[in-house]
Picture 1 (cartoon, rainbow, N blue to C red):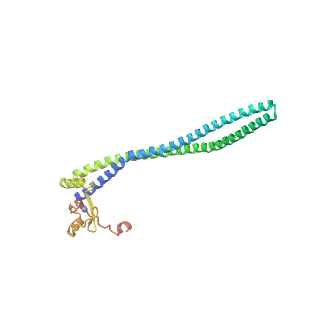
Picture 2: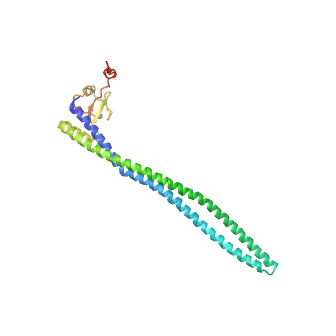
Picture 3: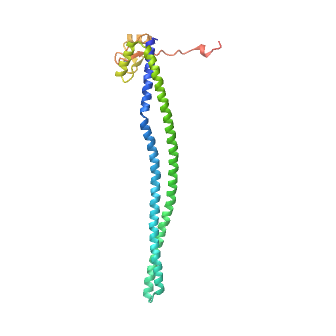
Length: 248
Ligand SMILES: [Zn+2]
């Protein structure tokens, strides 16, 4: 293969790898935000469960005050019952006592409901706290993985820049100029494989003579349509007995 063509292909590989690495690095703030959001959601679940438990406890306290109120009235009526003078008064006080007892019963049932609900809510608080702890662990692990990936990407960008410098220095300046121009115009992709007579990137059919020349890989040929530098990948050799039977 023409050495400059080889260099141009290698250059494209580096540029594409650098482009991918940079895009991945650019996604980092968005990914960090998604991790924060996951944590935030888990925290909200805990806060909401705790708020519901507090509401439940407040509601129970209110009902308990009502019970105390009715119990106060009940003892007052019982005292009155001791001091009644007439049958009519007795019946009136008994009626009030019955009423207060019924009220106490209703409110005690409400307290029982609240207590059952409190059990469920306490379990919910525990469950959501456990989930938060798990989410914190998972997010921490993801964050570490992200940071290590970040470091690897930065390192690979450094290697790519060094390799690129070497390739650019070795490359014919005219070929480099073509490469840089097409790369700028064509979204960072200046090289295209030609396969079955077609430019695999712009999908335009090459003239047969052009394709024949490209197949030889011995000169810099640009696609008539997209101007990318074309190369050809020969079909791999099907049998390699020297490798399959090294003992022979
Ligand atoms: Zn093309």
